[in-house]
Image (cartoon, rainbow, N blue to C red; front, side, top):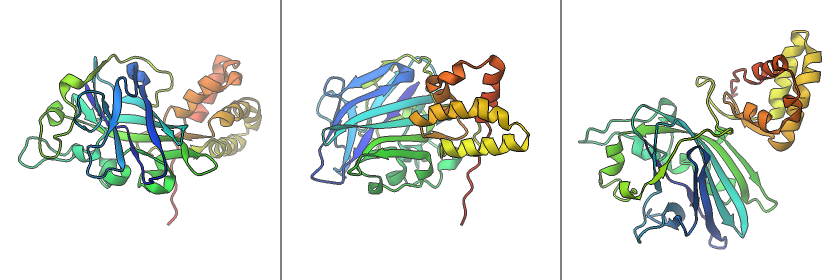
Amino acid sequence: MLIHLTPSFFLNYSNISVDLIDVEVPELGLHLQNEKDITVRFPAPNKRLHYVCRKKGRKAVYGILLNTDKHVTDITVITRWAVQGEVSTHRVHMHIVGADDAATDVIHLWSGIFNTPFRDKAPDLTKNWIPASCQPRLSVCASDRPSEREPAIWRLTDASGIIRQQTEYFTAATVEPERLLTPTRSNDRLPALEDAFDCKVREYADTLRVLYAYPGVTVCPVTEHEELIESDLTEEGKLDAFTAIIQPVLQEVRAVCPVFFTNTTNLMNSIRRFSTHFHALSDAEKQFVEYQINQPLFRVSVS
């Protein structure tokens, strides 16, 4: 499977320094180092956009191409940048939708192309996305690029307002491999097949997988979910179970991961990773925790 990724940074300030550190995709065993495997170039007319590409030749291209040994639907793209000399980490939990043999995170490449066999591949939930603001991309401050995808993005900033952690859930689409490999006016700066990094798909414990597609995936504070579970178990007459089993687990996790992505495996992944209390429970109690944690959550909007 071919996967086209475009780790990038939007730099809107002339007095801020930004340097690439590395790009990692744990599910593919990929760890690319700046100025060894990859570099930053400026293929877009907007030179505020810094794109990661393979360190080869001088041509500025959009992103990197990966060639995997088998099909994959969920990957984690972790890009680290040095912003003003300190690390800023951009983590994208990417869910790939479709049955084609290639995928790209570039939103405008999902559209149908006139006078070609390439039809619209955009998933339904992405139909109203504006590529300029919805493309996964790190920036200095959250206000630099407001997005329709904000409910699925979580950020942590330092005292000066610089983003030091940005984690987001992103749905990407599969496309025909030929769409990525056939030069056209709209994609004459995509990476070539001979420049692809060969990768082998492997298991990664923190891979985010979607449990319930219908309610959608959004960021939710762990405290909010904890309150919902407490309310439900109180109504069922099981408040003791909440106090003795659920609450200690969530208190441990909340200290490390204050938020999670709803309707995914994200929170249970964190529990398995960070909660010693969970690992001390019986099998039946662990199943009870998992059942309560993985209830579908709906986002209520008030207009």
